Image (cartoon, rainbow, N blue to C red; front, top):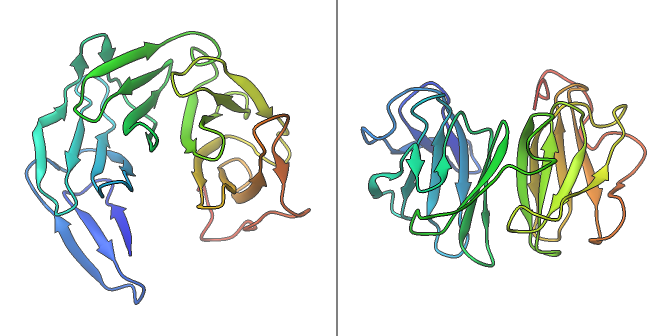
Length: 224
């Protein structure tokens, strides 16, 4: 089954493999503003949802049955962490921590919503960091930068970042990153309207799978 966050509505839908939809999370906590980010913790099935609003961004958390936790779970300002139009979010499955990416920083929260770190050091403070995913095979965070189209690897605290892919003819303006159970990395390249597949051992550069896009440009891949 797939969880689908509706961007300008008030619900998260659950889609089964026959594409029938069942609206499961429709509380007042999803208020129809610009909902952009959805992340799931596979350890307990809990779900995080972030609203992409400049001054009043929040993160909501639901347990696996759809019951909301907190009011909201993470406020706009929590300790040294201030949410401002988040662009990416992922769960670090080894710790249960939540990594939230935005224009000039990376915020790290624990599973209770406490701010652990607000990372503003380079390269996260420039070039519009936009996409993030946790790569459990290497215990690293993968960050895509929309400004210069690079993919960086960082440790789970947000430090120790290094570029692991920089080829604008293949990945241009990466806006989404996903990792499968085997560690394969999928990048949504908005500038080329493609989805690219890579492998990465944890050292050196990511290696593209094949010589053509994993999913080629088409009506269903515009600005993935």
